[in-house]
Length: 564
Image (cartoon, rainbow, N blue to C red; front, top):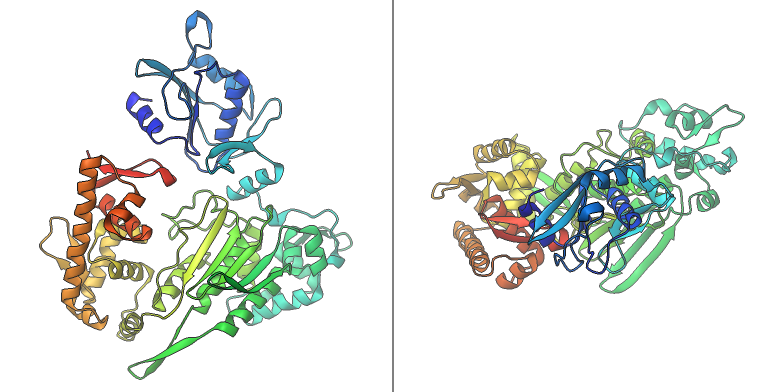
Protein backbone atom coordinates (compact mmCIF):
# COMPACT_ATOMS: atom_id res chain seq x y z
CA UNK A 1 0.00 0.00 0.00
CA UNK A 2 1.53 3.28 -1.12
CA UNK A 3 0.73 6.66 0.51
CA UNK A 4 -0.80 7.77 -2.81
CA UNK A 5 -3.14 4.77 -2.92
CA UNK A 6 -4.04 5.33 0.75
CA UNK A 7 -4.89 8.98 0.02
CA UNK A 8 -7.13 7.81 -2.82
CA UNK A 9 -9.00 5.40 -0.52
CA UNK A 10 -9.49 8.08 2.13
CA UNK A 11 -10.59 10.62 -0.49
CA UNK A 12 -13.32 8.26 -1.69
CA UNK A 13 -14.85 8.13 1.80
CA UNK A 14 -16.37 5.11 3.50
CA UNK A 15 -17.87 2.61 1.05
CA UNK A 16 -18.94 -1.01 1.12
CA UNK A 17 -15.27 -1.86 0.58
CA UNK A 18 -13.63 0.75 2.85
CA UNK A 19 -14.17 1.30 6.60
CA UNK A 20 -12.55 4.01 8.72
CA UNK A 21 -11.76 3.23 12.35
CA UNK A 22 -10.73 6.36 14.24
CA UNK A 23 -8.67 6.13 17.42
CA UNK A 24 -8.70 9.80 18.40
CA UNK A 25 -10.58 9.01 21.62
CA UNK A 26 -8.99 5.65 22.39
CA UNK A 27 -7.53 2.43 21.01
CA UNK A 28 -9.98 0.16 19.19
CA UNK A 29 -10.31 -3.17 21.00
CA UNK A 30 -9.15 -6.43 19.43
CA UNK A 31 -12.77 -7.62 19.42
CA UNK A 32 -13.92 -4.50 17.56
CA UNK A 33 -11.08 -4.88 15.07
CA UNK A 34 -11.84 -8.55 14.35
CA UNK A 35 -15.59 -7.96 14.01
CA UNK A 36 -14.96 -5.17 11.49
CA UNK A 37 -12.68 -7.47 9.49
CA UNK A 38 -15.42 -10.14 9.50
CA UNK A 39 -17.90 -7.49 8.36
CA UNK A 40 -15.73 -6.55 5.37
CA UNK A 41 -15.18 -10.21 4.47
CA UNK A 42 -18.97 -10.78 4.37
CA UNK A 43 -19.72 -8.22 1.68
CA UNK A 44 -20.96 -8.26 -1.88
CA UNK A 45 -18.21 -8.26 -4.50
CA UNK A 46 -15.06 -10.22 -5.19
CA UNK A 47 -12.47 -7.51 -4.57
CA UNK A 48 -10.60 -6.89 -1.33
CA UNK A 49 -11.91 -4.53 1.33
CA UNK A 50 -9.85 -2.18 3.48
CA UNK A 51 -9.99 -1.34 7.18
CA UNK A 52 -8.10 1.91 7.81
CA UNK A 53 -7.33 2.29 11.52
CA UNK A 54 -6.36 5.85 12.40
CA UNK A 55 -8.82 7.58 10.06
CA UNK A 56 -11.93 9.19 11.57
CA UNK A 57 -15.40 8.76 10.07
CA UNK A 58 -15.19 12.24 8.53
CA UNK A 59 -11.91 11.36 6.76
CA UNK A 60 -9.54 13.16 9.14
CA UNK A 61 -6.19 11.41 9.59
CA UNK A 62 -5.53 11.18 13.33
CA UNK A 63 -3.23 8.16 13.33
CA UNK A 64 -3.45 4.68 14.80
CA UNK A 65 -2.41 4.18 18.42
CA UNK A 66 0.37 1.64 19.13
CA UNK A 67 -1.07 -1.82 19.84
CA UNK A 68 2.05 -3.60 21.09
CA UNK A 69 5.11 -3.20 23.28
CA UNK A 70 7.71 -0.47 22.84
CA UNK A 71 5.11 1.91 21.45
CA UNK A 72 4.69 0.35 18.03
CA UNK A 73 2.29 -1.89 16.08
CA UNK A 74 3.51 -5.24 14.72
CA UNK A 75 1.62 -6.05 11.47
CA UNK A 76 2.45 -9.77 11.79
CA UNK A 77 0.80 -9.96 15.21
CA UNK A 78 -2.30 -8.17 13.92
CA UNK A 79 -2.43 -10.64 11.03
CA UNK A 80 -2.17 -13.55 13.50
CA UNK A 81 -4.89 -12.02 15.70
CA UNK A 82 -7.32 -11.96 12.79
CA UNK A 83 -6.45 -15.49 11.65
CA UNK A 84 -6.82 -16.94 15.16
CA UNK A 85 -10.14 -15.26 15.93
CA UNK A 86 -12.05 -15.85 12.69
CA UNK A 87 -13.75 -19.00 11.39
CA UNK A 88 -12.89 -20.00 8.76
CA UNK A 89 -9.56 -18.30 9.36
CA UNK A 90 -8.94 -15.18 7.31
CA UNK A 91 -5.49 -14.35 6.02
CA UNK A 92 -5.26 -10.58 5.74
CA UNK A 93 -2.48 -8.35 4.50
CA UNK A 94 -1.54 -5.89 7.26
CA UNK A 95 0.66 -2.82 6.85
CA UNK A 96 1.54 0.33 8.76
CA UNK A 97 1.68 3.26 6.33
CA UNK A 98 2.93 6.75 7.20
CA UNK A 99 0.69 9.58 6.02
CA UNK A 100 0.83 13.25 6.98
CA UNK A 101 3.32 12.41 9.71
CA UNK A 102 0.98 9.83 11.29
CA UNK A 103 0.83 6.05 11.09
CA UNK A 104 -2.22 4.35 9.58
CA UNK A 105 -2.86 0.66 10.21
CA UNK A 106 -4.11 -0.75 6.89
CA UNK A 107 -5.79 -4.17 6.93
CA UNK A 108 -6.58 -5.56 3.48
CA UNK A 109 -9.46 -8.03 3.84
CA UNK A 110 -10.01 -10.62 1.09
CA UNK A 111 -13.62 -11.22 0.09
CA UNK A 112 -14.80 -14.61 1.34
CA UNK A 113 -16.94 -16.96 -0.73
CA UNK A 114 -18.45 -18.46 2.44
CA UNK A 115 -19.84 -16.73 5.54
CA UNK A 116 -17.14 -15.77 8.04
CA UNK A 117 -17.64 -15.27 11.79
CA UNK A 118 -15.60 -14.68 14.90
CA UNK A 119 -14.57 -17.56 17.14
CA UNK A 120 -17.21 -16.52 19.66
CA UNK A 121 -19.96 -16.84 17.03
CA UNK A 122 -20.49 -13.25 15.90
CA UNK A 123 -21.56 -12.87 12.27
CA UNK A 124 -21.88 -9.42 10.72
CA UNK A 125 -21.98 -8.23 7.11
CA UNK A 126 -21.23 -5.03 5.20
CA UNK A 127 -24.30 -3.37 3.72
CA UNK A 128 -26.10 -0.05 3.34
CA UNK A 129 -27.90 0.69 6.61
CA UNK A 130 -31.07 2.60 7.39
CA UNK A 131 -29.22 5.93 7.25
CA UNK A 132 -28.13 5.28 3.69
CA UNK A 133 -24.50 4.74 4.65
CA UNK A 134 -22.30 1.60 4.77
CA UNK A 135 -22.60 -0.18 8.11
CA UNK A 136 -21.88 -3.52 9.77
CA UNK A 137 -25.25 -5.26 10.24
CA UNK A 138 -26.19 -8.62 11.82
CA UNK A 139 -25.72 -11.50 9.37
CA UNK A 140 -28.77 -13.77 9.72
CA UNK A 141 -28.93 -17.39 8.60
CA UNK A 142 -31.32 -16.77 5.70
CA UNK A 143 -28.97 -14.01 4.50
CA UNK A 144 -26.09 -16.50 4.56
CA UNK A 145 -28.18 -18.82 2.39
CA UNK A 146 -28.83 -15.94 0.00
CA UNK A 147 -25.12 -15.11 -0.11
CA UNK A 148 -24.22 -18.71 -0.97
CA UNK A 149 -26.92 -18.77 -3.65
CA UNK A 150 -25.60 -15.51 -5.12
CA UNK A 151 -22.17 -17.10 -5.40
CA UNK A 152 -23.41 -20.30 -6.98
CA UNK A 153 -22.68 -22.41 -3.90
CA UNK A 154 -26.28 -23.17 -2.90
CA UNK A 155 -29.43 -23.87 -4.89
CA UNK A 156 -32.31 -22.78 -2.68
CA UNK A 157 -34.84 -24.43 -4.99
CA UNK A 158 -33.15 -27.80 -4.34
CA UNK A 159 -33.63 -27.68 -0.56
CA UNK A 160 -35.93 -30.34 0.90
CA UNK A 161 -39.00 -29.05 2.76
CA UNK A 162 -39.24 -31.46 5.75
CA UNK A 163 -42.98 -31.24 6.46
CA UNK A 164 -44.18 -31.10 2.84
CA UNK A 165 -45.91 -34.17 1.41
CA UNK A 166 -46.77 -35.39 -2.09
CA UNK A 167 -50.40 -34.52 -1.34
CA UNK A 168 -49.37 -30.83 -1.16
CA UNK A 169 -48.81 -30.89 -4.94
CA UNK A 170 -51.67 -30.14 -7.34
CA UNK A 171 -52.25 -32.53 -10.31
CA UNK A 172 -53.65 -29.58 -12.29
CA UNK A 173 -50.25 -27.86 -12.12
CA UNK A 174 -48.59 -30.95 -13.62
CA UNK A 175 -51.03 -30.67 -16.54
CA UNK A 176 -50.22 -26.97 -16.81
CA UNK A 177 -46.52 -27.89 -17.13
CA UNK A 178 -47.29 -30.43 -19.89
CA UNK A 179 -49.40 -27.85 -21.72
CA UNK A 180 -46.49 -25.38 -21.59
CA UNK A 181 -44.24 -28.02 -23.20
CA UNK A 182 -46.80 -28.76 -25.93
CA UNK A 183 -47.32 -25.06 -26.73
CA UNK A 184 -43.61 -24.18 -26.73
CA UNK A 185 -43.21 -24.79 -30.49
CA UNK A 186 -40.50 -27.37 -30.00
CA UNK A 187 -38.52 -25.46 -27.37
CA UNK A 188 -39.67 -27.66 -24.47
CA UNK A 189 -38.54 -31.16 -23.55
CA UNK A 190 -41.22 -33.37 -25.14
CA UNK A 191 -39.75 -36.46 -23.48
CA UNK A 192 -41.46 -35.29 -20.28
CA UNK A 193 -44.98 -35.37 -21.75
CA UNK A 194 -45.68 -39.08 -21.26
CA UNK A 195 -44.24 -39.41 -17.76
CA UNK A 196 -46.63 -39.92 -14.83
CA UNK A 197 -46.63 -37.15 -12.25
CA UNK A 198 -44.13 -38.71 -9.78
CA UNK A 199 -41.69 -39.54 -12.60
CA UNK A 200 -42.07 -36.05 -14.08
CA UNK A 201 -41.29 -34.51 -10.70
CA UNK A 202 -38.24 -36.77 -10.34
CA UNK A 203 -37.02 -35.95 -13.84
CA UNK A 204 -37.08 -32.26 -12.95
CA UNK A 205 -35.35 -32.85 -9.60
CA UNK A 206 -38.41 -31.60 -7.74
CA UNK A 207 -38.61 -34.66 -5.46
CA UNK A 208 -36.24 -37.37 -4.32
CA UNK A 209 -36.44 -40.75 -2.60
CA UNK A 210 -38.53 -43.89 -2.93
CA UNK A 211 -42.06 -43.74 -4.39
CA UNK A 212 -43.55 -44.52 -0.97
CA UNK A 213 -41.61 -41.76 0.81
CA UNK A 214 -40.88 -38.93 -1.60
CA UNK A 215 -39.03 -35.94 -0.17
CA UNK A 216 -40.50 -32.72 -1.59
CA UNK A 217 -38.12 -29.93 -2.55
CA UNK A 218 -38.76 -26.19 -2.74
CA UNK A 219 -38.83 -26.59 -6.54
CA UNK A 220 -41.82 -28.94 -6.36
CA UNK A 221 -43.84 -26.45 -4.34
CA UNK A 222 -42.88 -23.54 -6.61
CA UNK A 223 -43.93 -25.44 -9.74
CA UNK A 224 -46.75 -27.72 -8.61
CA UNK A 225 -47.76 -26.70 -5.08
CA UNK A 226 -51.35 -26.14 -4.04
CA UNK A 227 -51.97 -22.50 -3.15
CA UNK A 228 -52.36 -23.21 0.57
CA UNK A 229 -49.14 -25.28 0.58
CA UNK A 230 -47.21 -22.50 -1.15
CA UNK A 231 -48.50 -20.01 1.43
CA UNK A 232 -47.48 -22.30 4.28
CA UNK A 233 -44.08 -23.55 3.16
CA UNK A 234 -42.79 -20.67 1.01
CA UNK A 235 -44.20 -17.53 2.64
CA UNK A 236 -41.58 -15.41 0.86
CA UNK A 237 -43.11 -16.11 -2.57
CA UNK A 238 -45.55 -13.55 -3.92
CA UNK A 239 -46.29 -11.90 -7.27
CA UNK A 240 -47.86 -8.45 -7.57
CA UNK A 241 -49.51 -7.09 -10.72
CA UNK A 242 -50.09 -3.35 -10.59
CA UNK A 243 -51.43 -0.81 -13.08
CA UNK A 244 -50.45 2.76 -12.24
CA UNK A 245 -51.57 6.02 -13.81
CA UNK A 246 -49.26 8.71 -12.46
CA UNK A 247 -49.77 8.48 -8.67
CA UNK A 248 -53.11 6.62 -8.94
CA UNK A 249 -53.15 2.84 -8.51
CA UNK A 250 -55.83 1.34 -10.77
CA UNK A 251 -55.01 -2.36 -10.22
CA UNK A 252 -53.15 -3.79 -7.23
CA UNK A 253 -53.44 -7.59 -7.13
CA UNK A 254 -51.19 -10.00 -5.22
CA UNK A 255 -50.91 -13.75 -5.88
CA UNK A 256 -49.27 -16.64 -4.03
CA UNK A 257 -49.80 -19.13 -6.83
CA UNK A 258 -47.32 -21.68 -8.20
CA UNK A 259 -45.04 -20.13 -10.80
CA UNK A 260 -46.54 -21.45 -14.04
CA UNK A 261 -49.99 -20.30 -12.98
CA UNK A 262 -48.54 -16.90 -12.03
CA UNK A 263 -46.84 -16.72 -15.46
CA UNK A 264 -50.12 -17.55 -17.21
CA UNK A 265 -51.93 -14.84 -15.26
CA UNK A 266 -49.26 -12.23 -16.04
CA UNK A 267 -49.33 -13.08 -19.77
CA UNK A 268 -53.14 -13.06 -19.81
CA UNK A 269 -53.21 -9.56 -18.31
CA UNK A 270 -50.48 -8.46 -20.73
CA UNK A 271 -52.54 -9.66 -23.72
CA UNK A 272 -55.57 -7.75 -22.41
CA UNK A 273 -53.59 -4.49 -22.58
CA UNK A 274 -51.54 -5.37 -25.67
CA UNK A 275 -51.72 -2.90 -28.54
CA UNK A 276 -49.77 -2.68 -31.76
CA UNK A 277 -49.59 -0.37 -34.76
CA UNK A 278 -49.24 -1.73 -38.29
CA UNK A 279 -46.87 -0.41 -40.93
CA UNK A 280 -46.43 -1.52 -44.53
CA UNK A 281 -42.86 -2.30 -45.62
CA UNK A 282 -42.90 -3.28 -49.29
CA UNK A 283 -45.66 -5.87 -49.51
CA UNK A 284 -45.28 -6.97 -45.89
CA UNK A 285 -47.43 -5.80 -42.98
CA UNK A 286 -45.45 -5.42 -39.76
CA UNK A 287 -47.05 -5.15 -36.33
CA UNK A 288 -45.22 -2.76 -33.99
CA UNK A 289 -46.29 -3.32 -30.35
CA UNK A 290 -46.30 -0.86 -27.47
CA UNK A 291 -44.24 -3.51 -25.66
CA UNK A 292 -42.95 -6.71 -27.30
CA UNK A 293 -44.53 -9.89 -25.92
CA UNK A 294 -41.25 -11.86 -25.93
CA UNK A 295 -39.41 -9.15 -24.01
CA UNK A 296 -42.15 -9.05 -21.37
CA UNK A 297 -42.32 -12.84 -21.14
CA UNK A 298 -38.55 -13.21 -20.68
CA UNK A 299 -38.49 -10.36 -18.16
CA UNK A 300 -41.18 -11.90 -15.97
CA UNK A 301 -39.68 -15.40 -16.25
CA UNK A 302 -36.23 -14.07 -15.29
CA UNK A 303 -37.69 -12.31 -12.26
CA UNK A 304 -39.40 -15.51 -11.06
CA UNK A 305 -36.38 -17.71 -11.75
CA UNK A 306 -33.65 -15.49 -10.34
CA UNK A 307 -35.39 -13.93 -7.35
CA UNK A 308 -34.11 -14.67 -3.85
CA UNK A 309 -36.69 -17.00 -2.30
CA UNK A 310 -35.01 -16.76 1.11
CA UNK A 311 -36.11 -13.11 1.39
CA UNK A 312 -39.54 -11.64 1.96
CA UNK A 313 -40.80 -9.49 -0.88
CA UNK A 314 -42.92 -9.82 -3.99
CA UNK A 315 -41.99 -9.88 -7.65
CA UNK A 316 -43.64 -6.65 -8.82
CA UNK A 317 -44.97 -6.27 -12.36
CA UNK A 318 -45.88 -2.60 -12.70
CA UNK A 319 -47.64 -1.29 -15.79
CA UNK A 320 -47.15 2.46 -16.21
CA UNK A 321 -48.47 4.61 -19.05
CA UNK A 322 -45.08 4.80 -20.77
CA UNK A 323 -43.21 1.74 -19.48
CA UNK A 324 -43.36 -1.62 -17.73
CA UNK A 325 -41.26 -2.23 -14.63
CA UNK A 326 -40.42 -5.71 -13.35
CA UNK A 327 -38.77 -5.83 -9.94
CA UNK A 328 -37.61 -8.83 -7.94
CA UNK A 329 -35.93 -9.32 -4.54
CA UNK A 330 -32.29 -10.40 -4.76
CA UNK A 331 -29.49 -8.53 -6.51
CA UNK A 332 -27.41 -9.78 -9.42
CA UNK A 333 -25.44 -12.99 -8.73
CA UNK A 334 -21.77 -12.57 -7.93
CA UNK A 335 -19.79 -11.53 -10.99
CA UNK A 336 -22.78 -10.05 -12.82
CA UNK A 337 -22.67 -6.26 -13.16
CA UNK A 338 -24.34 -3.62 -15.29
CA UNK A 339 -21.21 -3.38 -17.44
CA UNK A 340 -21.06 -7.12 -18.28
CA UNK A 341 -24.74 -8.02 -18.20
CA UNK A 342 -24.85 -8.84 -21.91
CA UNK A 343 -21.74 -11.01 -22.09
CA UNK A 344 -21.31 -12.78 -18.76
CA UNK A 345 -22.03 -16.50 -18.61
CA UNK A 346 -25.52 -17.41 -17.30
CA UNK A 347 -25.47 -17.66 -13.50
CA UNK A 348 -28.94 -18.62 -12.25
CA UNK A 349 -29.51 -18.15 -8.54
CA UNK A 350 -31.81 -21.20 -8.57
CA UNK A 351 -30.32 -23.63 -11.14
CA UNK A 352 -32.95 -26.40 -10.75
CA UNK A 353 -35.76 -23.88 -11.20
CA UNK A 354 -34.06 -22.34 -14.23
CA UNK A 355 -33.66 -25.79 -15.79
CA UNK A 356 -37.34 -26.61 -15.20
CA UNK A 357 -38.41 -23.38 -16.97
CA UNK A 358 -36.13 -24.23 -19.90
CA UNK A 359 -37.50 -27.76 -20.18
CA UNK A 360 -41.03 -26.36 -20.10
CA UNK A 361 -40.06 -24.16 -23.06
CA UNK A 362 -40.85 -20.95 -21.20
CA UNK A 363 -37.37 -19.40 -21.45
CA UNK A 364 -34.38 -19.69 -23.77
CA UNK A 365 -32.56 -23.01 -23.38
CA UNK A 366 -29.30 -21.14 -24.05
CA UNK A 367 -29.77 -19.10 -20.88
CA UNK A 368 -29.40 -15.87 -22.89
CA UNK A 369 -32.90 -14.53 -22.30
CA UNK A 370 -31.51 -11.08 -21.57
CA UNK A 371 -30.32 -10.87 -25.19
CA UNK A 372 -33.91 -11.52 -26.26
CA UNK A 373 -35.19 -8.72 -24.01
CA UNK A 374 -32.76 -6.19 -25.49
CA UNK A 375 -33.14 -7.31 -29.11
CA UNK A 376 -36.95 -7.39 -29.03
CA UNK A 377 -37.16 -3.93 -27.48
CA UNK A 378 -34.81 -2.40 -30.03
CA UNK A 379 -36.41 -4.13 -33.03
CA UNK A 380 -39.79 -2.77 -31.91
CA UNK A 381 -38.49 0.80 -32.12
CA UNK A 382 -38.34 1.42 -28.37
CA UNK A 383 -35.44 2.60 -26.19
CA UNK A 384 -33.20 -0.13 -24.80
CA UNK A 385 -34.23 -1.87 -21.57
CA UNK A 386 -32.64 -0.49 -18.43
CA UNK A 387 -31.33 -2.23 -15.31
CA UNK A 388 -29.83 1.01 -13.93
CA UNK A 389 -32.15 1.10 -10.90
CA UNK A 390 -30.95 -2.30 -9.68
CA UNK A 391 -29.21 -2.45 -6.30
CA UNK A 392 -27.29 -5.07 -4.38
CA UNK A 393 -30.59 -6.31 -2.92
CA UNK A 394 -33.03 -5.96 -5.84
CA UNK A 395 -33.08 -6.19 -9.62
CA UNK A 396 -35.20 -3.66 -11.51
CA UNK A 397 -35.93 -4.05 -15.23
CA UNK A 398 -37.55 -1.14 -17.05
CA UNK A 399 -39.08 -1.77 -20.49
CA UNK A 400 -39.78 1.64 -22.09
CA UNK A 401 -43.01 1.63 -24.07
CA UNK A 402 -45.28 4.17 -25.68
CA UNK A 403 -45.25 5.13 -29.34
CA UNK A 404 -42.50 3.37 -31.27
CA UNK A 405 -40.04 4.95 -33.71
CA UNK A 406 -41.64 3.64 -36.90
CA UNK A 407 -38.85 4.95 -39.15
CA UNK A 408 -36.39 2.88 -37.10
CA UNK A 409 -38.57 -0.25 -37.39
CA UNK A 410 -38.94 0.26 -41.13
CA UNK A 411 -35.16 0.56 -41.55
CA UNK A 412 -34.54 -2.68 -39.64
CA UNK A 413 -37.20 -4.57 -41.62
CA UNK A 414 -35.81 -3.30 -44.93
CA UNK A 415 -32.32 -4.43 -43.94
CA UNK A 416 -33.66 -7.87 -43.05
CA UNK A 417 -35.57 -8.12 -46.34
CA UNK A 418 -32.35 -7.23 -48.17
CA UNK A 419 -30.57 -10.18 -46.55
CA UNK A 420 -28.75 -8.03 -43.97
CA UNK A 421 -30.38 -8.90 -40.64
CA UNK A 422 -28.83 -6.97 -37.76
CA UNK A 423 -27.72 -8.78 -34.61
CA UNK A 424 -27.88 -7.44 -31.07
CA UNK A 425 -24.44 -5.81 -31.20
CA UNK A 426 -25.33 -3.84 -34.33
CA UNK A 427 -28.69 -2.82 -32.84
CA UNK A 428 -27.00 -1.56 -29.68
CA UNK A 429 -24.45 0.49 -31.62
CA UNK A 430 -27.12 2.05 -33.86
CA UNK A 431 -29.33 2.76 -30.86
CA UNK A 432 -26.50 4.57 -29.09
CA UNK A 433 -25.68 6.52 -32.24
CA UNK A 434 -29.30 7.65 -32.43
CA UNK A 435 -28.81 9.32 -29.03
CA UNK A 436 -25.48 11.01 -29.83
CA UNK A 437 -23.90 12.37 -33.03
CA UNK A 438 -20.76 10.24 -33.21
CA UNK A 439 -19.47 6.97 -31.83
CA UNK A 440 -15.90 5.68 -31.51
CA UNK A 441 -14.71 2.09 -31.33
CA UNK A 442 -14.01 2.59 -27.61
CA UNK A 443 -17.56 3.79 -27.00
CA UNK A 444 -19.01 0.99 -29.12
CA UNK A 445 -17.00 -1.55 -27.11
CA UNK A 446 -18.54 -0.20 -23.90
CA UNK A 447 -22.03 -0.37 -25.42
CA UNK A 448 -21.76 -3.99 -26.57
CA UNK A 449 -19.62 -4.89 -23.52
CA UNK A 450 -16.96 -6.56 -25.65
CA UNK A 451 -13.31 -5.82 -26.58
CA UNK A 452 -12.52 -3.05 -29.08
CA UNK A 453 -11.61 -5.47 -31.91
CA UNK A 454 -15.15 -6.89 -31.72
CA UNK A 455 -16.58 -3.37 -31.72
CA UNK A 456 -14.52 -2.40 -34.77
CA UNK A 457 -15.87 -5.46 -36.59
CA UNK A 458 -19.45 -4.33 -35.87
CA UNK A 459 -18.68 -0.77 -37.00
CA UNK A 460 -17.06 -2.00 -40.21
CA UNK A 461 -20.09 -4.20 -40.90
CA UNK A 462 -22.44 -1.23 -40.48
CA UNK A 463 -20.25 0.86 -42.80
CA UNK A 464 -20.32 -1.96 -45.37
CA UNK A 465 -24.13 -2.03 -45.12
CA UNK A 466 -24.19 1.71 -45.84
CA UNK A 467 -25.80 2.54 -42.51
CA UNK A 468 -22.81 4.44 -41.11
CA UNK A 469 -19.87 6.37 -42.46
CA UNK A 470 -16.50 7.22 -40.87
CA UNK A 471 -15.68 10.83 -39.95
CA UNK A 472 -12.44 11.84 -41.64
CA UNK A 473 -11.73 15.10 -39.78
CA UNK A 474 -10.98 13.74 -36.30
CA UNK A 475 -7.84 12.55 -34.54
CA UNK A 476 -9.80 9.72 -32.92
CA UNK A 477 -11.63 7.68 -35.59
CA UNK A 478 -15.37 8.04 -35.17
CA UNK A 479 -18.51 7.07 -37.06
CA UNK A 480 -21.84 8.73 -37.80
CA UNK A 481 -25.04 7.87 -39.64
CA UNK A 482 -24.66 7.92 -43.40
CA UNK A 483 -26.68 10.45 -45.41
CA UNK A 484 -28.93 7.61 -46.60
CA UNK A 485 -29.56 6.46 -43.02
CA UNK A 486 -30.35 10.02 -41.93
CA UNK A 487 -32.92 10.23 -44.71
CA UNK A 488 -34.46 6.86 -43.84
CA UNK A 489 -34.68 7.85 -40.16
CA UNK A 490 -36.28 11.19 -40.97
CA UNK A 491 -33.21 13.15 -39.92
CA UNK A 492 -31.31 15.51 -42.21
CA UNK A 493 -27.53 15.44 -42.48
CA UNK A 494 -27.54 19.02 -41.20
CA UNK A 495 -29.38 17.88 -38.08
CA UNK A 496 -26.71 15.25 -37.52
CA UNK A 497 -23.99 17.89 -37.83
CA UNK A 498 -25.81 20.18 -35.38
CA UNK A 499 -26.03 17.34 -32.87
CA UNK A 500 -22.30 16.73 -33.26
CA UNK A 501 -21.46 20.40 -32.62
CA UNK A 502 -23.81 20.59 -29.60
CA UNK A 503 -22.36 17.42 -28.05
CA UNK A 504 -18.79 18.72 -28.37
CA UNK A 505 -19.85 22.06 -26.87
CA UNK A 506 -21.22 20.25 -23.80
CA UNK A 507 -18.02 18.22 -23.54
CA UNK A 508 -15.92 21.41 -23.62
CA UNK A 509 -18.16 22.93 -20.94
CA UNK A 510 -17.51 19.96 -18.66
CA UNK A 511 -13.76 19.99 -19.33
CA UNK A 512 -13.54 23.73 -18.57
CA UNK A 513 -15.39 23.17 -15.29
CA UNK A 514 -12.99 20.37 -14.31
CA UNK A 515 -10.04 22.59 -15.23
CA UNK A 516 -11.24 25.33 -12.87
CA UNK A 517 -12.73 23.21 -10.05
CA UNK A 518 -10.53 20.12 -10.21
CA UNK A 519 -13.39 17.62 -10.40
CA UNK A 520 -17.03 17.18 -11.39
CA UNK A 521 -19.86 14.84 -10.37
CA UNK A 522 -22.73 13.57 -12.50
CA UNK A 523 -25.18 15.92 -10.76
CA UNK A 524 -22.88 18.91 -11.32
CA UNK A 525 -22.52 17.97 -15.00
CA UNK A 526 -26.30 17.72 -15.38
CA UNK A 527 -26.83 21.14 -13.75
CA UNK A 528 -23.98 22.71 -15.71
CA UNK A 529 -25.21 21.51 -19.11
CA UNK A 530 -28.94 21.67 -18.32
CA UNK A 531 -29.43 18.00 -19.20
CA UNK A 532 -30.91 14.98 -17.42
CA UNK A 533 -28.91 12.77 -15.07
CA UNK A 534 -28.88 9.88 -17.58
CA UNK A 535 -27.67 12.22 -20.35
CA UNK A 536 -24.93 13.49 -18.03
CA UNK A 537 -23.98 9.88 -17.30
CA UNK A 538 -23.56 9.16 -21.03
CA UNK A 539 -21.62 12.40 -21.58
CA UNK A 540 -19.18 11.63 -18.76
CA UNK A 541 -18.84 8.00 -19.92
CA UNK A 542 -17.99 9.25 -23.41
CA UNK A 543 -15.31 11.58 -22.03
CA UNK A 544 -13.88 8.68 -20.01
CA UNK A 545 -13.89 6.44 -23.11
CA UNK A 546 -12.09 9.20 -25.03
CA UNK A 547 -9.50 9.34 -22.21
CA UNK A 548 -10.29 12.98 -21.48
CA UNK A 549 -11.56 12.31 -17.94
CA UNK A 550 -10.84 9.64 -15.34
CA UNK A 551 -13.39 8.40 -12.74
CA UNK A 552 -12.60 8.32 -9.02
CA UNK A 553 -14.50 6.81 -6.10
CA UNK A 554 -17.39 4.37 -6.20
CA UNK A 555 -21.19 4.45 -6.44
CA UNK A 556 -22.80 7.75 -5.46
CA UNK A 557 -19.39 9.11 -4.46
CA UNK A 558 -18.01 8.86 -8.01
CA UNK A 559 -16.44 12.03 -9.40
CA UNK A 560 -14.31 12.77 -12.46
CA UNK A 561 -10.90 14.41 -12.90
CA UNK A 562 -8.76 15.30 -15.88
CA UNK A 563 -6.43 12.56 -17.09
CA UNK A 564 -2.94 13.28 -15.68
